[in-house]
Length: 324
Image (cartoon, rainbow, N blue to C red):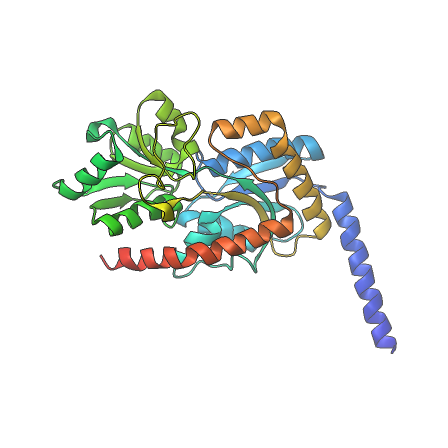
């Protein structure tokens, strides 16, 4: 009996300490890991949130870019971090769905080893080409990839991302000759595309939007369910006959498993409020990023549903590409 009372007392004390620590959080600078190189949507969202949360909590939230392996390296680092509210991650469909599905050793379970806190939103994927390729429509791209003397090289944000899987699925469906050129992130990839070192890109709308506006790349198809308001003449994959390629490269805010519920609740509320502010919403929508209000529980369920939806597709594509 005495042992049982002692155990209960210890548990109550531990819970009281945890609640007190959460109430005092954040007492030190907080790291937000963006698991891709600077210049992409993950980096943009990380820096936007760092600024907003720093202002709100009066403590420094700073961004650490830790790219590589389709987001697996930075994500694994967060999965192994202490769940004390000092380290968080810009999670995504790449880091928590497609990359784990296509990696032989992802080093983490995307549900069990994370606390999923808030849905941030994301842009669709867009297929763009360098003008020197000489194609102006999606139909012309298909013809060039079928009849050209060599494969059309293309960039993506990294292996296992939606930007990687969309061209590979197209290649399998239409018997096309595409060759993936691997980069650690969208920034350097877009630089090489604009320079003409590679001829095609399959990247997020926000990563390519500046170059689309400048006319340095030609947009041929977008994976959104509806046309993009600023460029309504760019056809959607659904209109082109590929409804299974309607996809959003979504991003979220996650931490290691075991982050105290009080911290999760505070962060979710502040992130939802920040994303709902008219100035920020307008800024994100201008880059093709659509947001949606979700509780931490809803976001966790959303991640689970995306894993169930895309894992079979990603694994099938990975096996197909590996067999080439």
